[in-house]
Image (tube, rainbow over the protein chains, first blue to last red):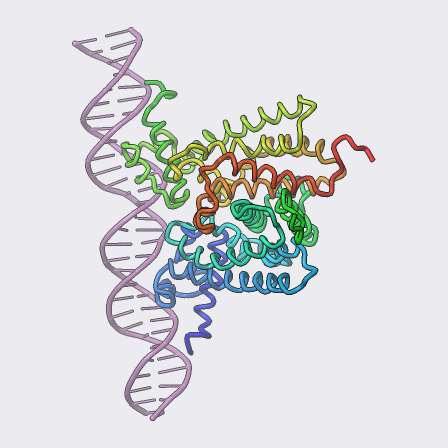
Length: 215
Length: 215
DNA sequence: TCACGATTCAAACATACGTTTCAATCAAGT
DNA sequence: ACTTGATTGAAACGTATGTTTGAATCGTGA
């Protein structure tokens, strides 16, 4: 059995992802993870070297494809002349929301990624910056094209607000259902997507000139 | 020495707050907290009963006054006839940002509150809903007045987005400085406040009629 | 001065943690 | 069938965790 199709390894990643999402990185123990995966306690250290490396592997397995999809959609925005600010925002937001879509297991990957920044200790911060840094650069450049007249710090801050609103919604959208007495329905993904994209786009837009307006 | 002016008790709250913010609830140990407070290991269990009760006490000490201030400012909005949507948003956002303002110690209370929702395990969720439930109700009612024509679920979702953007900024505003190459300066609180309030207000506003317009 | 409740202290409690060890087992290659 | 390297298993490693204990200490009112 070669390293790339080890079912134990994948089982550990799945179990770890689920338990990290449910209890946080620190509180999900190696023992709970290996037991949930039906593997031996030593399996984590054999396949990944340490718990920290396990965390990195879990993150990279999800964040990589997610950000790749975001960039793919951003590319589309930049080639089409009729693209709008909403399209750029959707390129960032929708791939994240798509992970919660039709996801019966709410304790899984979605909440994990939503809370990744908040839960990440100092040792994970560099890893996250590596994973998100290039993405941020590309998005800010694209946004500048759609938001002439805004200072860089304004674009960066508003981008930050977008990340916050998106992460919070992906990670904790289900609690909105609780405190709104059911008015918020996270399973109505179409409505949620539309609301979030327009909320963010309008927030971005204010104070900027129309794209192409050089006045 | 009466219970209300125990310097050990307050020292524990201070130390716990700082360490919770820096390492998270799970990773900050009772031993590290008591040592940082210059107290005995048993002090936490003597004064609070358990680590979980300590966490609750730390939260209530900060969230109580914060939300009281938010409601005080919301009252002002509801009595003044010339209040705007921006004022309502500011009533929610600014008291939170004020905690980071002029705060040299970035590892302290601010980040703690920003990440409270994400870090809270299942056992803290009810506590948070108790602390924030009434606040949310009041704000949603106030927002409905300024946003006629919006469905309740729209107001609730956008409120959710506001909480996300605010929490993320309060808790992790310093990382924006990192990935923006210094373009974002969290110490320029005036600019940050203005940007966040307007971002959120414009996000709220879109699709609603003007206040008082019954068409 | 004494007594009493409140508080602090060092020490130990039982349990959980991440990790390591090394023998047993397995899947292929020869 | 035998060897070899990869993988798994049970057990133990050392350390850290939250909590409890019981004696020592403190402040204060009688």
